[in-house]
Image (tube, rainbow, N blue to C red; front, side):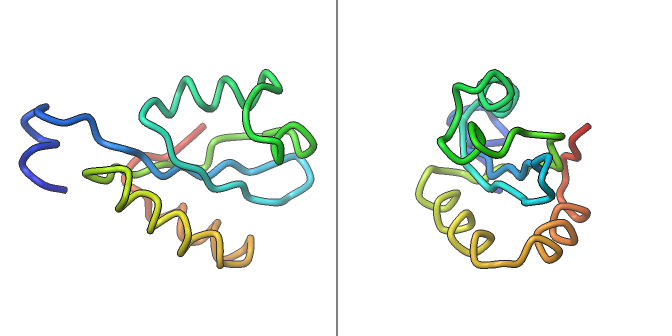
Length: 96
């Protein structure tokens, strides 16, 4: 994370992982993780979480911009659910 995030000059983007009730793990990016998670829980998030309701937020991590968050999202989406859970265990911000 760069100095711009630490000083508050730029709003960071976050990569977040949600464990769904069926055991799958959803990966997304957002500026406001709490707001986005609430939208997923209310059935107003991504199409995927409307049909695979969230169980809990596994965790999230900050990136300096949307581009780097999107690149991380792509990498994580290539992982199997078990790998995503292991990855989430090392995230700086843990979920519920």
